[in-house]
Amino acid sequence: SAEFDEHKSYHLALAGKLHRALEKGDLTLYYQPKISMASGRIVGFEALARWFHPTDGMIRPDIFISVAESTGMIRAVSSWVLTTVLRQLAEWRDQGLRLPIAINLSPRNLQDTGLMESLERFSTHWQLERGMLEVEVTENAIAENAEQASASLRRLRALGVPVLIDDFGTGYSSLSTLKTLPFSAVKIDKSFVIDMLEDRDAAAIVRSTVKLAHDMELTVIAEGVETDAVWAELKDMGCDAGQGFYMGKPMPENEVAQWLATSGWGLSPGARPS
Ligand code: C2E
Ligand code: MG
Ligand code: MG
Image 1 (cartoon, rainbow, N blue to C red):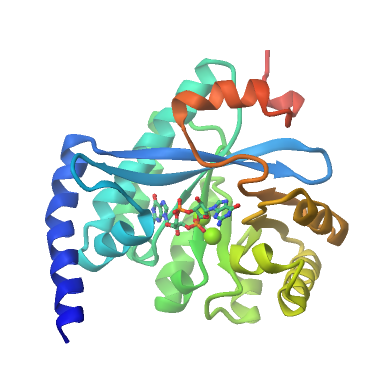
Image 2: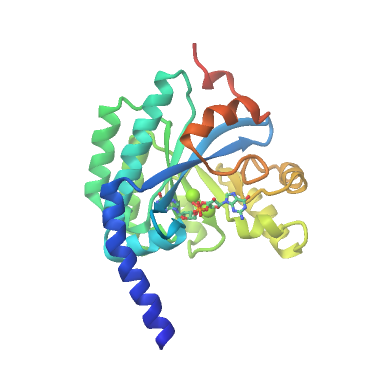
């Protein structure tokens, strides 16, 4: 159909532009805080990619990440994300700030032994403290090529990199895969969290995911916490941490210090080692 062709040529055009954007430095990372529900303290950040195109404006990651995935450029994108975050962690450490940052990896990245090798090499280079870099992958990342994916997950674990399951509830993982793989946390997809006060099914999914994760000794993080009412309900359900516009929107790095100073969410003593 004409619509399909239009969609396809838009994607093709984007693919070419993305290549240049990477070289020109038009990609940047925003950081969104995660907050512990029990203590109200900041437990870390998630790095989210943004593309500022000189004429098209901001292109959302949902669009350009899928372009990167379908053209093989995801390797270059993820490698850029990785080095940017490792450099950021080193900079924060030098400024006396010790908070983990999570990066998102695509399913393909877990099939890429080259990327895993750079991760090992870079973490040595930047003298990364264990636990400071985290990785988020969706359930589908495991479904694609389970053997290779679990080998990568074990490599990450050996490096002391916690792996979180992103968008939980929207993919195709079976409970048995979750049990056999070394995950440290589950992130409940925002589609359930946003609706949980109006939609009983969504609330039931959130509640049972919290229970399931805890029974499996995993931490649970809710994404898409937009109001204090949802925050209170999640806390009541025993959810460990939350991420969402209510606590903090994704922000450029140069706004992080100001946000830390004024947001009202606390820092754990370990986050500012003297
Ligand atoms: P994600 O990893 O599940 O990230 C959470 C998304 O939810 C982010 O969208 C974030 O801005 C948004 N969000 C956070 N709090 C709220 C809230 O309270 N309400 C609502 N409605 N949304 C909220 P964003 O930044 O547009 O990213 C979309 C997706 O793109 C990410 O979902 C992730 O899958 C992918 N992505 C982003 N950056 C990267 C990257 O560097 N590499 C890869 N492979 N994927 C990335
Ligand atoms: Mg994520
Ligand atoms: Mg998510």
